[in-house]
Image (cartoon, rainbow, N blue to C red; front, side, top):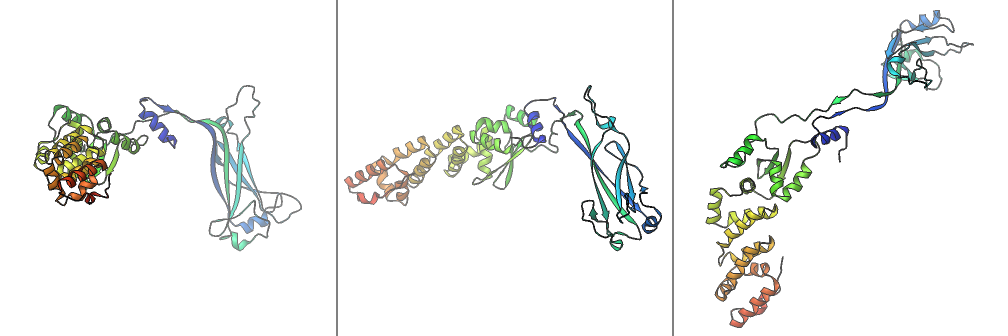
Length: 384
């Protein structure tokens, strides 16, 4: 859910609204400040009589002109030694901030404002305001070079205002060179995709950064689709994914298969030559639910089943729910000679772990019948 106005507008734009504008009506305020300096204050106080004042120059806040009136010897009788300060509006700016409705009775010359007077100390910091308790005026604290400084903060209520209509611009396209594909392009369709559309996903895996297109990953892998829905927040044009427990070679082969529905020639050679690459790629295909690639890896591993590998391969098939591979392993150990030979290897414990309990019992009874092993050797067992 968008949490700010900018994110909301970006989300609306991303949903396909090509021509989007926005405006807001709200009560507006304008704040301004004026510093009034009274030089030779001691002389001014001695010459300006009670109920007489000195004036600041006019200043503008909220479309109105204002002036500070300072009474050095108070504005009331009897003279009580106080300084009196007033803010006066010297001109009307009503037409600037108030829209008058017919028959509303609103007075166009009324300005609503809040004010705050402060006396600045010798360091220029506000040290006394109109809300401060009455106490003797301390010349040595407030007068610097016999100058009194008065700060006036004014906040004017501008009423309800509608800001000007603004066009919501589309997010700029990423600049710089397009990231290269993580595999060699060998098909017309795949080549066209990478040349016509910029990759919008960067995958950090095995110390490398691989580029890809969001729509392609989401179309071929429900796991990528879920991960990318979290990585792409409202308005974002690109996203990054981090994949742990996988090397870049396997990730590159996985992405290539997602795009082309085929493995590269060198990867096929690795699958035929040894089981290692097939095992790693099967784990990746299972993790991202690319079922066709997973089946290819299962079939490759079926060709590598042997006395020394069947136990580990069966355990792998159990962990990653590979029915084709599991069936091939079962067929291999169903031969009494093969079963006796596997039990004699270091893979015996893995065989007990990888097999279902009923099959373990069956093998134990069969081997005990032929006298190859004590049935108790098979218990206890563990399954995945």
